[in-house]
Image (cartoon, rainbow, N blue to C red; front, side, top):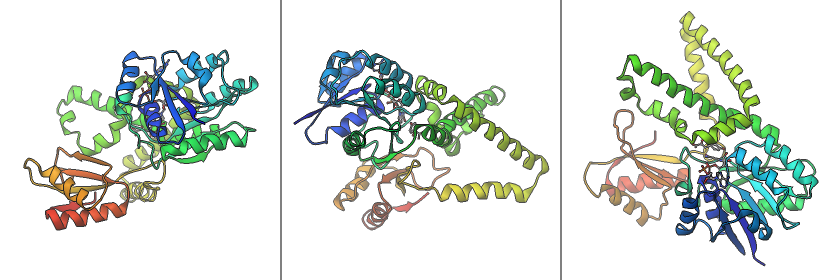
Length: 365
Ligand SMILES: NC(=O)c1ccc[n+]([C@@H]2O[C@H](COP(=O)([O-])OP(=O)(O)OC[C@H]3O[C@@H](n4cnc5c(N)ncnc54)[C@H](O)[C@@H]3O)[C@@H](O)[C@H]2O)c1
Ligand SMILES: O=C(O)C(=O)C[C@]1(C(=O)O)C=C[C@@H](O)C=C1
């Protein structure tokens, strides 16, 4: 029997989930988005098997409903669900970055016999919209499910079994604990990134050249400041209690740093950086929330066709790449072509392949 999966909100995350779930057996993926252009693109780009025009009407047919909408929109839909005609067996989930308010709302649905199990894949991008969706976006990332207490284990297992096709690593987490942890590693960093950009904006009024000097460090730490502001407004509002707590801790920490600088305490300042480096370097790379691809920097000469030459050699040796980009400056890196791999083994094989076949130097940053 075919199961009908219905994705509402076909942007970066909803679109990526929809693309991934098309690989699940006996599954038909339907999708709805309130933007007409997104619905058209969903059809043209085959992000879903079929586009739906009326979500409430189609919901009657759905076995699983997945919200890929901004978190406040998901709350509104959850209110509407109360009056939708749904299959008794339907399992509803979301992909939202916050969980406490959504899981509180889920309790109201449970009273009406509707199963809602929260979900949150810990992968994404500062890009938004359907054109940024990719079938492998969630691969290897933790995918958290946040059932309320007392949720039927069979329903949780059914959802887990379906979402496994995103290739995410499924874990179950309590909603409140989820919001505490994601405040630290995801939501608060967005505030810091935005605040640094504001600081540069202020500085550049007196020193206009400052912007031109912003290089790799500033780019890396502020990339997420280019995220969708409305999405982050909703996330930070829903998790504002946790964020105020993080902000208080941060302010205390900044006062401590200020003291170190005021005192000109060499040892303490070095320890501040070296302790942070040790912690950062021991974080789970590629397995955890801090998923990072294995990057290889290739020092290539500047002539047409050189990129396809390198990727051609890798293809000959059956080495898959996950990303490729050109770094526009040679100031802070050795190589100019950056190729990402899924595993360290692939990266090592690629370095050997490039050294052997192309004779270009490779570096790991
Ligand atoms: N961006 C990330 O990195 C990331 C990562 C993990 C989870 N999330 C969560 O995933 C969800 C979606 O985020 P995204 O990054 O894909 O955003 P997005 O802007 O790319 O996609 C959201 C989609 O929802 C649609 N939408 C908005 N209101 C709607 C409505 N009333 N009815 C139907 N469709 C509507 C939009 O048109 C858009 O296509 C959010 O809850 C977010 O917190 C985001
Ligand atoms: O990579 C990014 O741009 C992201 O911000 C992705 C990111 C994060 O890591 O904070 C953002 C929100 C999520 O809910 C999950 C992942």
